[in-house]
Amino acid sequence: MFSIYYYYCNGYEDVIKNVTSQSCDTTSFIQLPGLPQLTDRNVPSFFNLENKYVFLALPKLQSQFQQLKEGGNPKVVLVNTYNALELEVLRAIGTLHWVEIGPLVPFRFLDAKNHNSYDKFCRGDLFRGSEEYVQWLNSKEMFLYSLGWNSTLESLVCGIPMVAFPQFGDQITNSKLVKDVWKVGVRVTKINEEGIFVEGGEIKKCLKLVMGGGQRGDGIRKNAKKCKDLAMESSKEGGSSDKNLEAFVEEFAKVKDQKWMDS
Image (cartoon, rainbow, N blue to C red; front, side, top):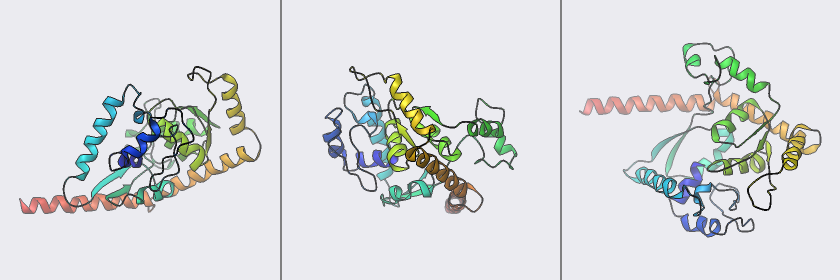
């Protein structure tokens, strides 16, 4: 998601607008570095000028990215993802220094052996502790939801296939990643004549596809498990996200100490 916002604010605004101005056009493609081909149906809803929140979202995004341009050295950006999931996408942007420290979810990286105070502090609001939250997630065979980034990550790190029912914002693009890039779920597709509601039959079809047998369903569940294994690997001690965060803290401490000495 960050990459799409970055490109919109750094030279690709017209490229994106040329497609999003043609509402519901699935034949025109947006090609951005490091990303799969996108259509109007795959980009954040804020890019559609008819969206009622566009006047709030886009100016704020442009202001934030303008701040990243100011100053000399490449800016350090902490991102809630992990190398194995989006390395190519992040490396395509060479003007920023990415530090992947995810997945950051409301539990201690699914480490059932860790019950320290940090673990208790990070628990989800609906659960007494991380272990209870993990047990709830692991009890699910699949999820049907709108696919914000937090819920998407939670499903990935638990290896749970997804049925995407996106509504607005980043949910639209996350659904594209889930269905076509990571191949860990499907997206409801058919809408009624008014273009608003998804019929019950469409949802039932998607649920059967993900939870039932067949080559595609088996492949989705296999990919979901693979994403979980990669997330666990990156998050454990010595994993890529663990090393990235440790290196960032060490570098930040050096800069802080140097500024203190120079003052």
